[in-house]
Amino acid sequence: MSTIKIRSLVHFDTEQLMLYVIGLPCLFWFILFQYKPMSGLVIAFQNYSLFKGISRSPWCGLRNFTDFLNSPYFYTTFKNTFVLNLWGLLIGFPFAIIFALFLNEIKNRVFKTVIQTVSFLPYFIAVVVCCGILINMLSPSTGIVNSIRSGLGKEKIFFLSKPEWFVPIYTGLNIWKTTGFNAVIYLAALSGIDPSMYDAARIDGANKFHQLWNITIPSILPTIVVTLVLKIGSMLNIGFETILLLYQPATYSTADVISTYVYRLGMVENNFGLATAVGLFNAIIGFLLVYSSNKLSRKLTQTSLW
Amino acid sequence: MLKNKTASIRTGMDERVFDILNILFLSFLGLFFLYPIVYVFSASLSKPLYVATGSVIFFPKGISLDSFFAAAKLPLLWRSYANTIFYTAAGTIVNMILTCSGAYVLSKSELKGRSFWVLVVVVTMWFDPGIIPRYLNFRDLHLLNTYSSVIIGFGVNTFNLIILKTFFESIPGSLEESARIDGANQWQILRKIYLPLSTPALVTVALFYAVSRWNGYFWMMMLVTDDKKAPLQVLLKKLIVQKEIPLEGVKILDLSTRYSQDTIIYAVIVISIIPVLIVYPIVQRFFKNGIMLGAVKG
Image (cartoon, rainbow over all chains, first blue to last red):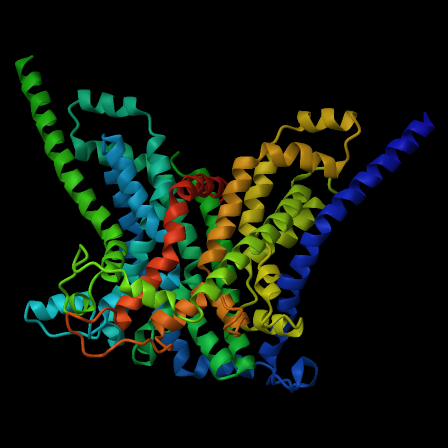
């Protein structure tokens, strides 16, 4: 009896040990590349210098934070982050839903597949290539857009150096790149709707619009709510890579967001302390947003009508 | 009765009109998604003069491959192409080893302190230390300007790890039970039961990794400053976005001009996206499933 117990105990321990051994490389990675950088956040409270390092750089308390809050960049970067997100929410977000709704109505399978395949393609094109194509197509000297404009007798516009054009261009690029990707989830939700509901509605004389309003929209509403909430939660992770490629000093007033400002502060001006402070500020607000939006979405999907 | 019939004919007519308008609308959208790519192909194949004057709108004009020959002679193009292939292949392998092992361990309900370890992993999805601390971390580890910086430094994507963990959890425990009776240990169970049973999920996650490796530029640009080690995207950024690399090509175009800066750039873009277009039909199917895997979790 006792030998069996001992043997099973030993067996149990080697099993645990083996699990830990298998997980060790992954754990080691998380420590080295996720948690160790977090310790580097202390330089947000330092007047950090690359040569002195963390141990010998002077401490400066919260000065980096107050400097940021008092600088004009605070207002500009927050405003731009907000405006770019707002356009995304008002135009880009519904665009994918509308696209999915219309695509779902197509009866011809081949046509449907072709359109969905085409819409998904831009998602796979690297952001550098997307921006490269855009820059070349909008170029004032040889770009197709301006060639057509001058062909129509209109003035050429240097789109990418005009602050008022940045937000529409950025939003347009995102719509082009992500509509197909975002539509996948709605299409899946739409395909889950019971077709007999539409048959019943049709017998009752409901037209397309009635069916859309009374069957389709309510059926995919939970999906819409969850994606919306999660999108708001990740507001601060706005397409930083895209902006970095598309903006220029002339358009900073509408294009500069918190993360691009952090990048410039750190990598261009070597002001690591301030850059880290701004980044930390961003990360904390981002954390609060993500955390609360996740909570909210869990609550909504459980207590919502369905 | 008659009233009903006319009503149903009318709705039938309405639906037909709607279908036609819908097909037109979606064809237009399809064109919108496809147009920039078609344009790049056409421009790369056309004579520079036609491109510069805007006469190439959809189809190529004055077809020639000269821009491609000129692009192929760019000194760093093939080097960075090879680098990208290496980064993608080696990086994805490292990703899969770390992600599979981590996901397997976290999926085991018998793991002691499991909820703590899951939290350790999940927290990194919520809180990002930011660009500067990450950069300085790479510097402290003496990884700047090395191939391994990007390959190992981006070894795990927490989201993918969670997807795989969820998938592993769905594998019925009875299979494992019988293997254990035969004396199989954890390592053998992972290799002989979990991995073969999760092939679709593994392929999906591997493709997620491979695509982001192939397309990524920001951290490559930050960490690899040596042109000889730089991947395609970093070269492309200098070439087509910042236009830092001077390209040969005459300024005054006429009909005899064989290639210009613009057409070379378009040719480089085409060269860089051809592999993506080739694998796209396979990749997209897995991606669609993958989005749903992630959505169930979220």
